[in-house]
Length: 306
Image (cartoon, rainbow, N blue to C red; front, side):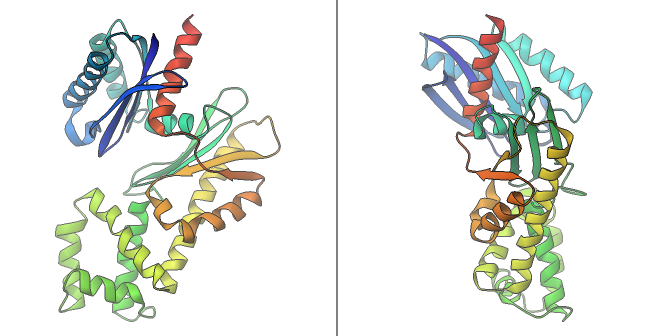
């Protein structure tokens, strides 16, 4: 049976599937594959071991194409070239295509159709495909000076809100009490030590602070609700940028979104829908997962080569 492999790599987990456009034969999940986190050699070992496991589980599958969505791909030319050369050699004779993980997100969410896909997870960016099969991207620079509207960005901004609530620059809300209770603060300034030692060194911990912000929003903290509204504005700016960079077949552009920010959808989704509508964009929910998008791209590779 004809088959292809799709891989959706991320910072915390990597999903692998083998199948075709209509059926997934087998799927597995392994740890994250960011070379910034585990090193380039470990990335190759992880990808190769996952592909080997899929092929062992499906010995009758005639697999000759593999699409890999990888974090940070496209941001370092030398690393991109090394990963391309090494993985193509390691997985030969399977044809390999490497793309940024946001691209397989688009492919799954919009099933490879024209439109713009927004990632709002630990980081954030928007990526779109126009009518000439051209791509454009906005956002996703780096959490230190970008990733606006992401869970990391909200977590970091919520820490600032706590400091302002604590010293009276803004009115105290639910966030203040939740943070005091969570970290057992006897003095508000003890939060500095918490941030420096328990939160700031770890990207996932900063992003995880968004959960406290969400709880505060659910308890009607107006400053945190306003923070989520700012996040929506940042994401809309990314969509606008991508929309302006590309040509479209229709007057209304389809936009999809997924990521951890959707846990706060009651503060995000309807506002996002309204703002997108005002710029002739239609928000729709993702059709498929990112790893299924990688599989679709791999199947398209097979069609192109035939």
